[in-house]
Image 1: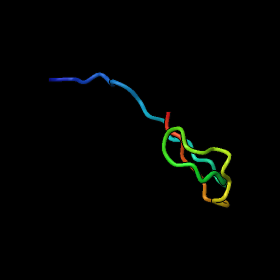
Image 2 (image 1 turned 180 degrees about the vertical axis):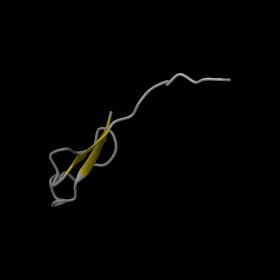
Image 3 (image 1 turned 60 degrees about the vertical axis):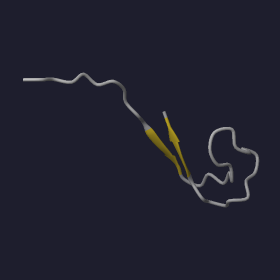
Length: 43
């Protein structure tokens, strides 16, 4: 029987009401023109 050890985990955290219009890594965080669009942060 073969077993696998986990190599890592990913945690997704939702931010309801986040208004930043930034996309991707290093986006324009202060640009809050996307009212109530929400966001997901991956760790």
